[in-house]
Length: 233
Image (cartoon, rainbow, N blue to C red):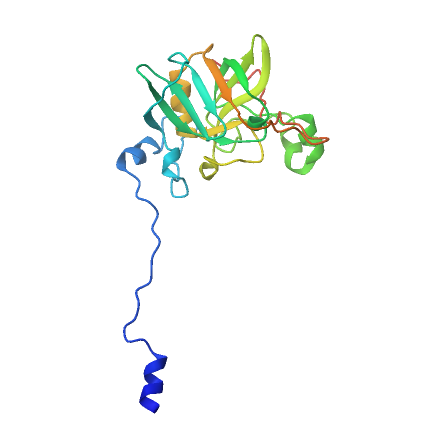
């Protein structure tokens, strides 16, 4: 019986290990999200290894009543569309922060900034003085700035809505709901969008679910910035 017992303890053929592989990224996207040494702050390539490919920039069919040149922000599906002619649009992936889930409606791009400064609100400083106190006077533009490489500021008339479309240095957050901020995009994507839209561009923010409300003592205007930013256009 001993040979039979030994045979039962070993497999007849070793099974190969299954190796999970990240989806292959096309050369087109590697170039699209490659480094940008020509920027004021040289921008490294975006790490796409943890990004769902459906959130990468793409020209798509998009039927809408909005006029070409309009920005449509679809917070539910984590997409931003720049409407084009003939039923087409450029679709960008976005990450949606708390402020992004707290507002919907129509606005215009009241101003644009390249490499904007960021200033935490008084509420943010009071809530976390160790983290935010050093930046109470404003954080200089740069790769670590929460607003990223570009920012679009949405206004209704002459009133700042405090709603921002901006870059991020956290590419893994695109396509997700995040804890802070408004509408974030890959830095390479916000640079592209910023170059295509002028001040005064119409923006429609779609938010079909219930709007998120601040908790007591909480504010959502965390990604405001200094109106005297260098680089304001």
